[in-house]
Image 1 (cartoon, rainbow, N blue to C red):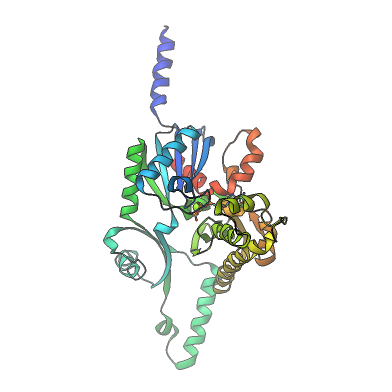
Image 2: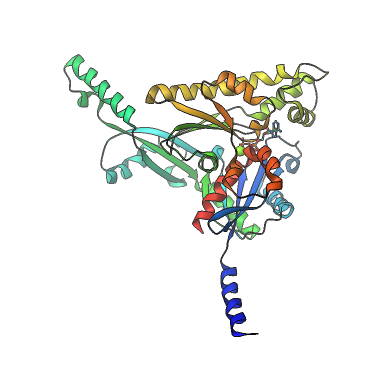
Length: 385
Ligand SMILES: Nc1ncnc2c1ncn2[C@@H]1O[C@H](COP(=O)(O)OP(=O)(O)OP(=O)(O)O)[C@@H](O)[C@H]1O
Ligand SMILES: [Mg+2]
């Protein structure tokens, strides 16, 4: 071996040790999703991805919500890693919004150091467990120009009415967004990672991961709407930051339940029919659209309400709504969404944020919405390396 060869081998070995691939895991209530990305000259390259339904691990059907015990989750993730050929040794886990909390609260304006004392005290009102048991993160939401203007006008009006000064009557408030995760949830994921032989030190509430995967790179107000199996999660991102996050207690699973009831068929069969026909096309046994529509309409009407309230309160126009989550794959959903939602609606394309082989383009475009959380999280983890 020449000197040059041995030098190149040393260099290679050293570089080889540096982890370049990351895996991100999204624990959905109906299925677990994984994505493995690699950093190649600053680009995020898709190495592999996969999904496995939770139902069969708890004697339930594909698509059904399943609260699996830890040993079953381990079995499922091990199977998924094997099937998807996950080789990364470092990873990140998305914390489901059902086990976390994001709230926005108004607090009188004060110094940053004082806020650090006050926020955890205020947060107690919203967090149903002792603050010592949760990990708390918070930040002040900057006001936009319209909000400043609206606040000024309110104060002028108030000051004129009863002789009190405007500042006395309303005081200045800042809006603080609080995110909290129960420490037990993190501990359970850490145990699982240890058993999987995976180094995981990044946890992120799924909402933030999803946003990273589909947000346009601008300052517009955008609604990200994740239609999952159990719930639908609406978030509004404005001026590049999350302003609001809200959960609607209905998801795509409710559609399957309606089909199952109205056609008097088992959940599994109803799930197949839902995926095959969706809102486009009747089947012999009855009008499928009639059993699907009420849930879809309810979900979008609720999302629209949240969005309209935001627009009114902030005097700010929302630009568009981006759909993600498996529920966004329902055939014909976009047409119904467009007829209810007052801004343009599009389906998210999270795989656009990563380099993918051309031959997979159409498959990835179709399954993209389901992988938004996993992709957004993997992108963040890649930046940490
Ligand atoms: N092709 C399809 N057509 C219609 N619905 C679909 C299709 N594919 C998946 N779904 C539905 O999407 C839902 C699963 O979506 P997703 O994987 O985003 O949910 P989840 O992450 O498990 O749930 P959650 O986010 O509530 O925890 C299921 O109800 C499933 O029936
Ligand atoms: Mg989900």
